[in-house]
Length: 99
Image (cartoon, rainbow, N blue to C red; front, side):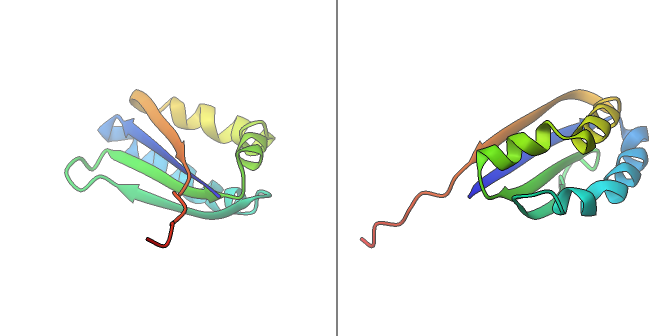
């Protein structure tokens, strides 16, 4: 499983536009093959900063979403609202050794 975190800084006056966009697309993203979980977080100290937190079965599934028509609609519209470039990273859990 891959965990993807995308941190996005919006112009404060654009946060409402972002929330409308996110709410209209979140269920479609959740229905993408390999997407197991999607959540939206808001920074506790800076309310114009949001993160998406998602779980994907594999990098291949995440990449397929990133090549999809849905991503092609959602991401450019989201980027247009940014006040700074997004920060994104993918991580995987470290297996426990039973120590």
